[in-house]
Structure formats: structure tokens, C-alpha cells
Image 1 (cartoon, rainbow, N blue to C red):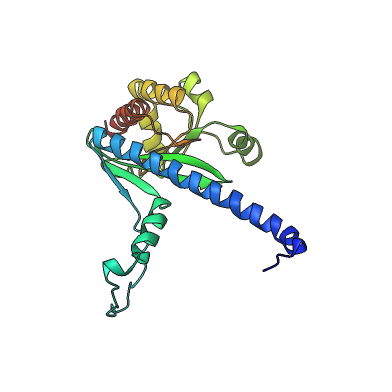
Image 2 (image 1 turned 120 degrees about the vertical axis):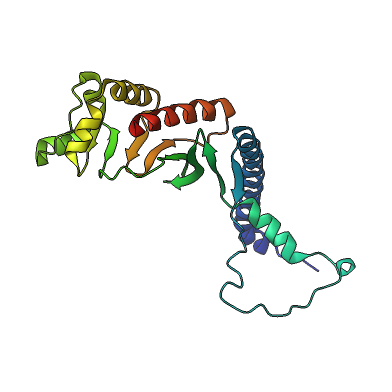
Length: 233
């Protein structure tokens, strides 16, 4: 069979793209696999539980299961099992459990093609204040100037210059943030982790990368749980 050189030239860009895409996909698969292995080990050492989404869990939901023909194992490859294994390699992971008595959830998320680690520590009970504490930035300062939305003052200049505090029950929030022990705990937390956000449910931290270091998680969770105690006192 004679191969037309013109056809090869026409197909070359597609073949090149396919090869590059396949190599990138394989690299991503093994990178994520290594990441999951690290997180499974970290979860074990932190006393938490590692899990990942079942990629085929949506199949058959709400529908009766139909009898299926099962090809004998020696008749060929288990295609469904192979597909499930490959797809599960790309499924998101999650670590959750109790740390120092607080419920903790660790996961990843993507934004603008970048991966973030999200660590959330939940309070034992919601605060019920409509509380919102974030690091002070240009937008919050603009809000103060344009809309007159002033941050609730703590009376601590260092802390007031670092964070923006707002909420619905301002009387309760003012009582909370005036305590010197609370101020020092919050200031220490934001000095270490500027990406922290506090609301009625708990404390959330976002790292601008996928964090897979045990010591870093221990340090972070110790700081978050110490801060959570200050909110409960």
C-alpha cells in the first residue's frame, strides 16, 4: 500500500498534538497519583481519613440495575475496570476528621488554571454573629472610603491595620475582639497565615499550591485549632 506524502504532511500537526497531549496526560496522572499517596500518608499520621470521589458513582443512580453480560476473565481485558482505574486516578481527593477536637476538611480546588489547597477547621458550634474576618487589602480600604464601611475596631493598632472585621451582631463581635488574649491569638494567626478567613462556621485557609508536607500541615492545624479555642472562650 502506497502512502501519500501529502496525507502525512496533513496529519502531522494532529499526530504531534496527540503525542504531546498523551505525554502531558500521562505525566499529570502519575503526578496526581504521587500526590494522593503523600496525602494518604499525611492523613494517617494526622489521625485523619483520606478519601476520593468514586468517578463512576453517578452511573445507575436513580435507575434500576440491569443484568449485564460479564465477559469471562480469560476472554480479554476488563475494560470497565480499566476505565474506572484510569478515571479514578484523576478524581479529586479529600482528607477529613477530627484534629484537637475540631472537625477538619482538607481538599484542593482549581481557579484560573492554578491549584489551591483549602484547609477548613470548623468551630464546635456556629458563632451566630454573621462574622467575617479577612486580611485587610486594597478592596476593603476602598469600601471604607467609598461606602463608609468601617472595620470593627479591636483597639489594637497592629491588628486593626492587618485585618478587616465585619458582621451582623456588632455588639457581640466588639466584646469578642476587645479581649487582649483574643487579639494576640488572632494577630499571631494572621502574621503566619495571611490567607486565613474567619466566619461563623470556622476558619478557612487557602494555600496557593498543593501542600503535601506533613510538618506544614501540623503547624497550620495547630495554629487554626489554637485560634478556634480563642473564639470559644
